[in-house]
Image (cartoon, rainbow, N blue to C red; front, side, top):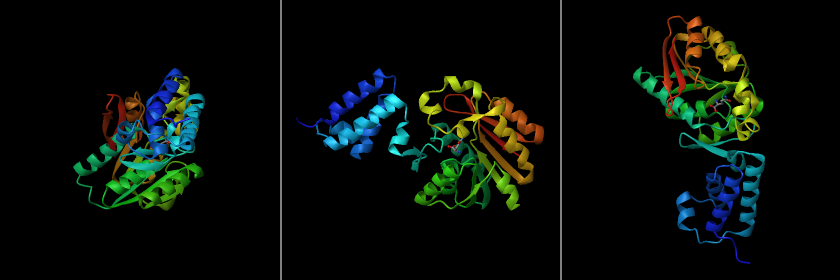
Length: 287
Ligand code: GLN
């Protein structure tokens, strides 16, 4: 029997996925992964045969994604964020494109303030795979970057990412800002994409998310606001003379998170920024 062609593999996989309510695009992502090629090469070389062993691995991955909802990023072992590849697994939240907008908002804000070429003390709370800390450390010229997570397994992933991408970060295991309070240092910039999904939204999430992203990274008590309250209550202990606090937030949390910040910092200069889908997504607060 002659080998399957790239074109036949794509056709089989897209219809297999679509019939099971999965995205057809996963077929191309997994083919690109197994054949180590670009999308353009997939399209141009559609008549080429695929090595049967590679096809078998591809088929297995397609079935695992379609039938068990395992995210394609876990099958591939990485996801791209802000133009760089990050290792991911079930211990960390898979990077989301919304979080790239947080990076843009923070770097723009620091530029506007004239702070982008100063040495800044920065911390990323709940760093997960490390995307925020690592990207900011690499994008900004001079920062002293710290990153905290409660999960030792997540910190292992973040450390690997920092090493492979060449970012210098000090990692701490602990709850929100606690390890930073212990160092006694003051932070010029505090960034976080904490868990913010209310428990009540659980049933509306896809099985790919609920069964495979870590619970700790997704859900927060108090209607999704608990992490913001916890972080803001610790901020006075690590605040510098002037500090930028930057949060990613849920699409309807702009007012609530603003109120939480204003309770502790009545004079904070706040700005809620919407994402590309015109949903509240980021809060920047000068404290
Ligand atoms: N900071 C990490 C990220 O943005 C993890 C976020 C989280 O686990 N809620 O991906």
